[in-house]
Length: 249
Image (cartoon, rainbow, N blue to C red):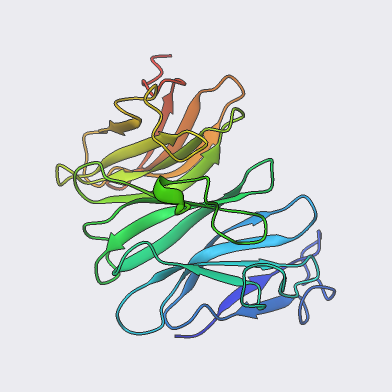
């Protein structure tokens, strides 16, 4: 239950009184909910991604946009309240990362088809929206605007980055063997897997421990990809070449 919260601070630390109500904004995605990520548009508008649920059954992906003053952007989505919800499956769908393309389209990543809030049996989930919050019919199979990717077990996407050429990288965890490995997938601009990356667009990396999980991804200007996360209770860091191979340097 409860609501989600967005807060803005002045550069020296106090709450910004020009934002929302005394620097704070609340948004209700419904039921058990959370905001997991945000992105700032060049025009100052703020995009939030996360999840909500309308009942005790299942989570759905939630997206919202606010104007620079903290008011809901009523032109985002079709409901007039600045919010968009997206279902991939009949069970749990959760957004964990959001990113903006240079053309203003919005990408979000996470997982789909989880069970009972624990992510079991889930796949990478990726969706793209037009700047107005409608799903992009030029992305994903059948014009759905949505893509799921199965590595052969349970997968959760945690990080999202857009390369300069328009290709999209999602990083997270794959549990195909039970212990868990770093997992990366790269997509072309239409949502298809990039066959020139790893094996059919997918890469897994084993650190030798349990629960290897990529939590953050950054792109270097030379095309290499850096993924950070954890293995058991240790920091884990890997760098990949543009083709998905590990960087021996």
